[in-house]
Amino acid sequence: MCTGDAVDDSPTCPRRLSFDDAYTAWFLAQSSCREALHAWARATPGARCAAYRNYRTALNLEEAAAYELAQLHSSRQAA
Image (cartoon, rainbow, N blue to C red; front, side, top):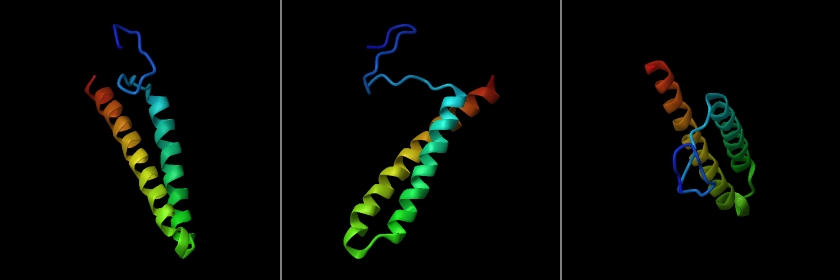
């Protein structure tokens, strides 16, 4: 449950990241996404489906991290 400034660790109560944390999360996510893309490209025929799923997962995480970073950036510019 979220109350005031207290934040619990449940996934239903996300905390806002600092700008540096959001940038780091995005940078790591895009690095993982790039690695997953390369792994998919190098995958053998029998491993391509799993490599593609891994890439899509990494891509979704990168997209979420990019969105969070963009939200923080736009709120900083509005202030």
